[in-house]
Length: 111
Image 1 (cartoon, rainbow, N blue to C red):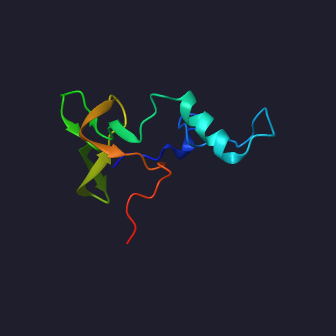
Image 2 (cartoon, one colour; image 1 turned 45 degrees about the horizontal axis):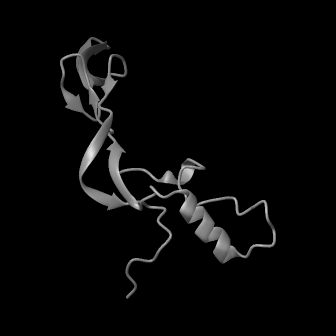
């Protein structure tokens, strides 16, 4: 469920290129400054992109198929053909319980 945020560069405040304008600052100060520049950053995920689609009738599913009759060598055979057209994605869903982002850089539990 849900995707990784690793693919989108620049969105997550804890990932960065590591380069700064002032080379005299050490890594601790750079991390603190980066954290202060994003006061609304949170390790929680409240929404996710749904993988479900609506069809023309309003039905909701991951995939849609229609049954087609194929005649081969005088025999009729039923096959399922996947439908790709006229499907609408469900969109963004609000999660019931917030999840922790996969790129959160802190160890939460160590056994």
